Length: 401
Image (cartoon, rainbow, N blue to C red; front, side, top):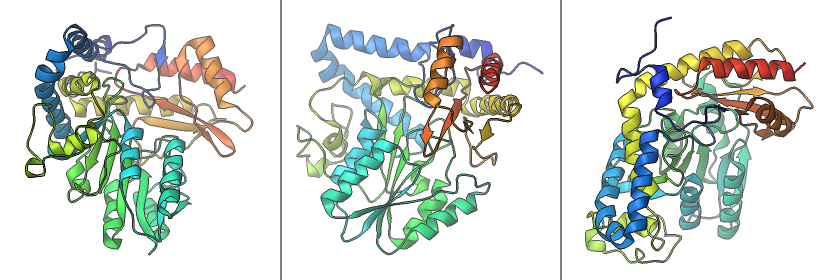
């Protein structure tokens, strides 16, 4: 097989060497937390050094222009308008901004799938109780092999009481990629608002947020985009700029309404500062997002996807040799990314397997729990190797005996 080359001419070995990785660990868990490229680590460290040396100069003079440049870079990558892109520490924070700041007409319901992140389910429990609404979940056809089957399940679940639909673009337990654009088209027909949990989506699936036409979209940058911890975003869909109240009352609380979308010295606008400003905070992770996007641009996002597709194919082939592991991530190209999940044998405790893999082999893997069974979820990013996948296959093969 010819050597795989990225857009900048790097081999897979060179791309891996550009990452901050523990050489003794097989990190197959980007779906939880991505390691940093060395360039990103050096950039965020440089920023934090300047913040430590001269905080006033950094926060008041230097940081603002750099933050706006980072916002523009991320917006371009997401196919979004930077004037509607709010930086947040993570997806959970972004979703809470919407759940706490959005008023929905009652009586009615908020609709969720049965595969949403547990903490976000709690978030909507509180929000619906506070507003006198009901919370309803419906089952997803997770074994579907056709996007139309998933859209049909969403269509069937909606009714005249549904005020807001909340769903994950990429399901955390199984890696199933939902047809978000088609789902949003169904909600618009019915006047239902949409909030998408895109925790895993940036750099895992191509995004064009302005064409998605959802009301709100949230995402993490610390997973597949490999940006520093503490970098996420909330995107305000067109027409939703005035629908939310801020969670915090600080100096952004009373924006200049005559200049809502004028870039200010803080690297934001009065509209965005309304949500972002919680009192002074460390903005270095947000500023370093620009470097994270640039790093993967150099490799070429299409080349990264091609390399990741190779790794997924190899993983499916190797773990397919273990009949006790049941694959549950669809093979349809529109329904999966680079997280591949397997149902564990009955009676197996995922946390025990996670401990054994770490103690015996220094393999980092996620084991989500579902009602009645556990899942092994394997994340394969460009910096992973065939040897790491082979090591995992041998280790799991020994454990199922």
